[in-house]
Length: 75
Image (tube, rainbow, N blue to C red; front, side):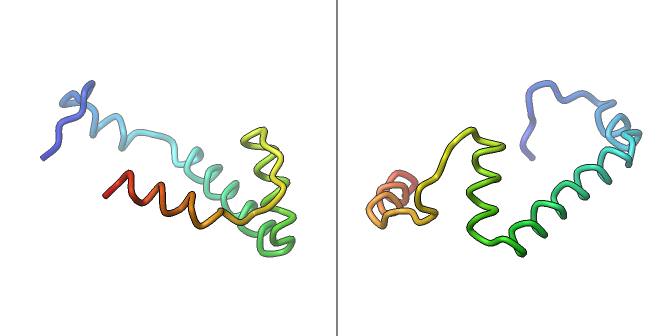
């Protein structure tokens, strides 16, 4: 079992008491994003990346060498 800093015996009870309204909001937001991507494709990816990350993409593809380098860092 992994123990996380800040874990206390009452944490599970507090988590159970959390409002399900927050979960509904998150679920609706995610559904909205998925629907937008399904409808608009790459255009939606560009818009969402700019909105959430503040980055303007020129090309949605990642260069093969960048993927390989990333893989090499986790092996």
